[in-house]
Amino acid sequence: MDRAATEAAHALTLEEGEFLPFSVAWPALRDGYLQWLQAHESTGARFEAAEVNHELALGALQLHGRLDRLDRQPDGSPLVIDYKTESATRTESRLKAGTEDTQLAFYALLTGHDTPRAAYLNVGERDPAKLHESPDITALAALLADGIQHDLARMAAGAPLPALGEGSACDWCAARGLCRKDFWSQP
Image 1 (cartoon, rainbow, N blue to C red):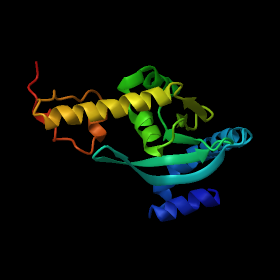
Image 2: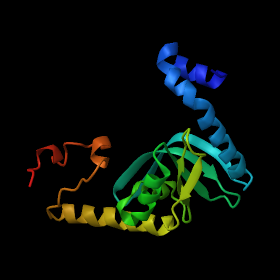
Image 3: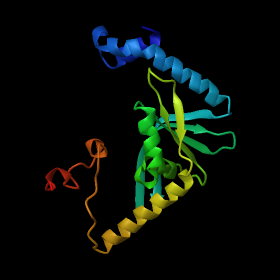
């Protein structure tokens, strides 16, 4: 095991055997990421922060989020990167979903910048790391902001909102139960 893997195992208070599956995969993941990083930094992009909390006022609402990684482009604009360990095919389908996948749009909105960039970065031991950038992120972030404000105005006016929640997103939702999805009747 290299030093970084050893430090990670100790930080997670894992015994050597518990970290073994990760230590086997680590060299390929590390090498693929470092190759991507070298090419990425050659464009002039520079790391700014990781696991950083961001807030943005949107009317009377305060948005909060945590960004995996924030870089600065040579022109000073932000590039938000969200790490993914899923297949590249699944990541590409996220981007094709347009307004259905709000994660990058929300993060771009949190930057408060007029022309942010946002992307998913696939990392894994099978394929080299690859950046999947959202081409319409500025428009998607504006649509999301408008949608949030529209929904809040409807709620303030007493309009009922439909219960939403599809697929695996519900498994990770911090507000699970608020929508009562677990109690929806099955058709």
